[in-house]
Image: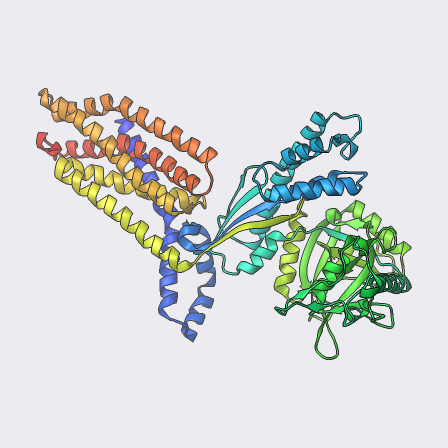
Length: 616
């Protein structure tokens, strides 16, 4: 009697918790239906405002739908491990650059590990890895072990930083997994602004504070480049030429190409055809020539003309000129940063002092604060460029020493962009650049079709199994059908309660669970039939049937749980979605088959509502 009461209490608690967990899902559906009934009228807006908190709370706690049902983005991103290894090298020379160029070319054409390609290239050149990596006393095997560790840590760190960015962006139930040694698989359900997410994920967020060189140094550098271009022969109509298709191309001879008097330029200022200089020494280029100028400044022969430890960088955002043309400033900055973004502890998107221009306020840790105070104090009257991912966001003049570790990034077009910048700064810089190698979008309409197909398959499976149980097992089939309903309810409630998402493979897992739940009931019912055939009473047959079928049911369920656990551990994406629902469904099936149906039979037996014919 004590066990019976405990079982009944357990069933009641499980049922109530399941209903409670799914209640927000029902409220979300009801509120959304009510909201849609107003269409695009003022009543719709008024209803949304009046029920805003209720709608948001229900949506937050409701059962989430996966990418294949709700629509969204599927991305495959790759960590640039060639760049990572280049960062770890020292004593770099032309030979190292040639080897890494070969590694990059081969890694882009193969899925092989970058470290294996790197080792093979060094062996082909008969050069020890210690010439460029770590300590010269290290063997190649030791260096490979260290680089492998760096590679694994970079992939794990990139995954976590991307997850932090996505979490701060506000995507519900993202799926982020690694594949191989350099790929990250990302699924973002419900994402609509794909371009914004794309930019958010790709940005390395490498923040640096660099000193600008003096305007006169900038002018002398540009003159030197211009003279070099003249001496090497540039088209008389200027550095930017058009091919027959109308596309811009680089007519300049490549580094190392010999020049002859016949191709000497008649223009004395080929560089200044694409770059302008203001009276204060600030250089700029137009939006039309920006791409060409960028490629020009990245050429090795042009970079060799720059002062030691400097480089030319373009502004991240353009200024508007007198004629409405967009102009990008060009800065001559020191290569070595005075401070990096690793000291940033807080970033917040806000508006400037006049409340119009968006900006990002940054705070630093104690180490960064002391360094920033020293840097600003030593460079009063000079300009410091705030560089993010190789582009200059702003280059303010230091007015006075800044002792509190605060700094500001401005030159931002919108508050949305400022918020995205806040996210990447908070999440931290990626250890190496990442690029999107594959991208797919699933539209909401396609997701709606999948939902209909999935629900139809689930409904047909449930109806077919329920009818079979009723026809074949008569009154006992009713108990099995009640257990089946509770089984599905438990699966959905657990998914909702743990904020997991329901995907198309998840629906397939529920359908399989229905079959397993019925299979357990069939084993029990057939054992009861055998006991009844031996002439035992209904009460004795039910008791013996459950006891003798228990070991077989337990074995089959434990085996399925083990298989589902392995699928979840070693699978990715859809396979994990299937495995999760299968594990939940299998556990629920064991509970409903052993406990729920048994208590239903005890209840019917207590009221004399069961006989030998109740089992068909």
